[in-house]
Image (cartoon, rainbow, N blue to C red; front, side, top):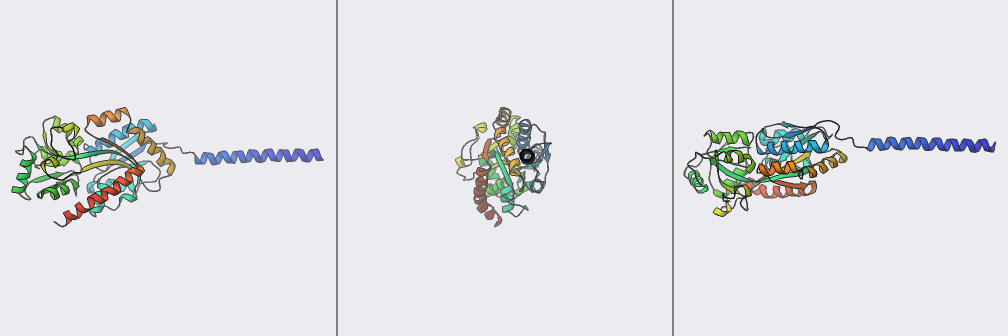
Length: 323
């Protein structure tokens, strides 16, 4: 009897261990992150052909190799970037919709032009920062920044500015620093705005270096000044506004975000992938050749950076509203 009882207890113990082991395996399997298991969408909130589109497509191609899944770029224009960013914000929280957010994620809410604020997004990383370049057509009579400023002052609200996005914080800061006034013609991205200058519909524009590089190289656009603390390496012959006694320093930046509620495990995969992407030789080569600056910030540093930009842009935009 004792032998039988001992045998029975031993059998039950083995069964319980097997069941517990199976249960543990099931729990582990539930915790495993099988991401990504299908193609990912990257929303670009501006038209194809501009700087944001260029950075986004290069990043998407690099991410594809790192994650072993297609990363499909979708250009969603409208509202100066608000439409695309809002669509990304409201996407499913499964990590399969990424959004490239730009400085408009700060400037638009400050101007009451967007149904979101920076704290609404789950940040992944910043990947690019560029100074602003003031350009005119090479056929323009304005040969220098002094010429353009003189023309603007002599003809208030008569010269046209081709804006890649509106409201345009480049233009606001330029106006605040110089006191000039002009007509802003809005476009959904840099590419159509630059075309307007080339066909003579606008006298000047302000864009990122990467957005105007091809036209400068082809002799179609003339850079007059850079809105930065120091001269841009790719345009060393072009002065800064600071050199001309004008305190106007501004830039644009581009990063990646996902909707709030995206699982931490998925976010971690994306954070690691972004950190690798900005160091990928092909991405680095493309960015350098395209006059696009690589500026990696992880989620924590990116959040602080955006919060500081709110403080910087706030007073400038408020001053613009009073005019």
